[in-house]
Every structure is written in C-alpha cells, then in structure tokens.
Length: 117
Length: 108
Image (tube, rainbow over all chains, first blue to last red):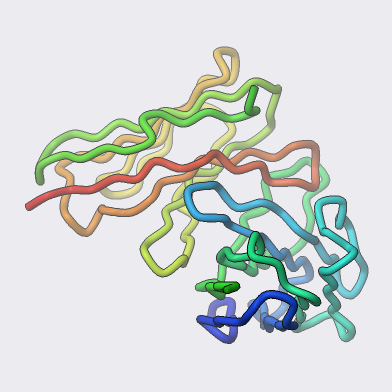
C-alpha cells in the first residue's frame, strides 16, 4: 500500500514570495490533515478536511494561508505572502475516516521542509 | 501550562540500555498516540492506546488514565532507535494535540 505522498520535499523562498505544497493521501482515506511543525516543537494542526469539506481550520492563518481539496482526494496548501516565521516542516497526514470518539490512526507523509529567507 | 508535557526533552544513551520516555497530560482523554519521527520529517505511528499496555517488538507503551500519564519504553536500545518520540492525544473528537517531543540518541 502506497503511503502519503508530498511534494516538494524541500523549498527555499524569499519572504513575501508565494509557495504551494501538494499532498496525495493514501487511497480511500477520507480525512486529510495539514500540520505545521516548527523546529523543536510538536506538529500543530493547520486544517482538517473530511472528503472535500473543511472540519477544522481554526489555527490556519487565513490572511496568508489557504488550502483546498477540491475533489476530495489530493490537496494543496498555499502561503501567500510568506514570512520568515513560516519556516517549518509542513506535514500532511490522512486517516481512513473520522471517529467521533477520537483515536483514528493517522498516517503521515515525509513532509515539506520550507525555509523562508 | 502546556496540555501535554514530555520528559526528558533530550536523552542520550548507550546501545543496549533500557529507555523510558514519559508523557503527562492535563485533560481527560480517550486515546493517546506514541509517534516516532526520524530526521527528514517522516512520522510513524507506533502505538495508539486507551488503557493498559501494548507491546510491539522492543517497544512497550503503558498508560494510566487516572494518573494522566503514559510511558514509552525501549528495551535493548539500538542506534537505529535514534529519533524524536512524540506523544499526542485527541482533544475532543477532532484535534490531535502533540507534545514537544523527546530527542533520543543511542550511541553504538
């Protein structure tokens, strides 16, 4: 079974530029997550999709970050314009469904390492 | 106060040593994950547990729901175990809250 795919693996941009990340979840997984992991910290959820609908985007900085999952399969996360503090690893994860009781296992992609200069 | 605290933050040990990483949390939870993150960012889910103990190979995870505490143990540690180990729990039904991680280095 193929895992969660992400691209690019690395990206270096200058502040105020735009950047986009792509994620392809495990086939059949309805739920997709984007996390931001700043060096030395645990991942922080940015946005959660259930199929093509947004379940939680409360921690997404909506003035500069946007994400979509138009067909309920792969997803893109965009930052426009980027700031220095956006330097982080952006992790995509997927799970089969969404357990109302919590505890659905998430499968993580390798991440995209972003450096903003 | 953070909702989840891990200790130690950094741990260096010699190959073969018994390793313990602790995770304490301040809210009631239904399930807790232990995750392993290797250099380069990839995260692997090791365990998901809601009570008692689980064992997988040389890894053992325990949880005490009443005391709000979980531990991850590694027996006969090996340099390939070097990674960041993260505990995470579900906040409600939707959000996975992560600890800051414990960086483990096993020297040969």
